[in-house]
Image 1: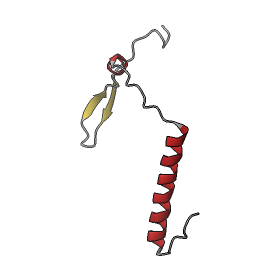
Image 2: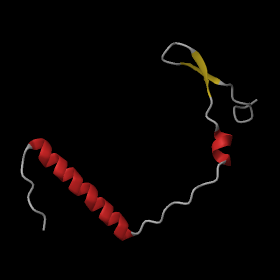
Image 3: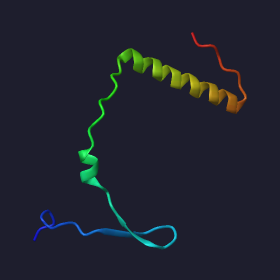
Length: 73
């Protein structure tokens, strides 16, 4: 019997307390849930989000290093 046709044996593992438990990945349950439609993102939305993350990163970096941020054009 090949591995593809044989039912998978339950996978057991030990938790942090040393107790044995069975890993249940729940693939049928996950597949049965309806998919949520993704929000549409335009190129402009992506650019604005990217610029916002960059500005936050720059501000945090300058604050951490105690330097004054140069004004952006």
